[in-house]
Image 1: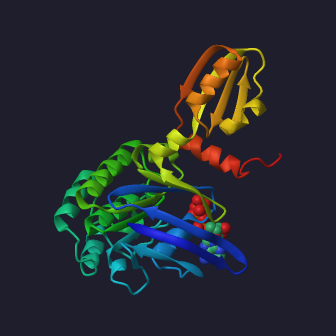
Image 2 (image 1 turned 180 degrees about the vertical axis):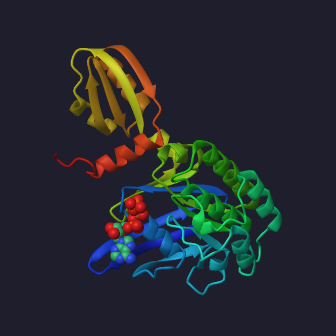
Length: 298
Ligand SMILES: Nc1ncnc2c1ncn2[C@@H]1O[C@H](COP(=O)(O)OP(=O)(O)OP(=O)(O)O)[C@@H](O)[C@H]1O
């Protein structure tokens, strides 16, 4: 397990990370999501020991991770902005990385290059953004790290390549017990592949939860009743948001939806009641809305 404990960091007077704690399990994919500029990349750079924190620690299987520790040799980071050495091809970069990573697999590399149809002799700096991402991903998987950090890895990729990425990643996580943390704004994609999610805003983790549990904890119901529904009479159900469209009420609630339905049926003649499933995108908007994000006046 990769554990970040109470990590804080200031850049000058600006507190970019405040008491950040996350737990990413082995053999799982952890989605790190958050508002623009909330500190996701900065957090990943701390996990990699590229930056040193003011407070807090990073642990891998209970061992403290610092720049010179053994554990960090098994970590691999694919950054959002990719810079490759001058005039390097993927083949040349692979040979270079072979000297650095003891578990790197040439067999896997050759298979993946074929799967993604990459020209291994092409100058990496002359590749398109999407081709660079594919090259970096192939290299990352070939290295077979124990911890893989992917920052905006599917940004700029077409749907077919994204699908291939996820298929490869899910297989690798299952086969090799990797710990993967993906930072992304593509919540629809993360919804399908993440086991656990951490939602960040303004340098803090607002919520960290198993994705399925998050969907059980916060739910949406829609209903129509005879009479006027007043959300403040139902405050014990922790209603986070209400919306009325015609005679239909739509409520997002953190309380017990079954009890809510029972109470509603006691109080009203209920004409319609449905439970709706929440997507990660909706959960994200609900959490950030609760933190006041996006509520600024025009
Ligand atoms: N080296 C640095 N020096 C000073 N400020 C920095 C530095 N790196 C990042 N920041 C600031 O820290 C904040 C967090 O940046 P970071 O890149 O971690 O955000 P992010 O969540 O990855 O954003 P996005 O989703 O927009 O890519 C931003 O306000 C950014 O300007």
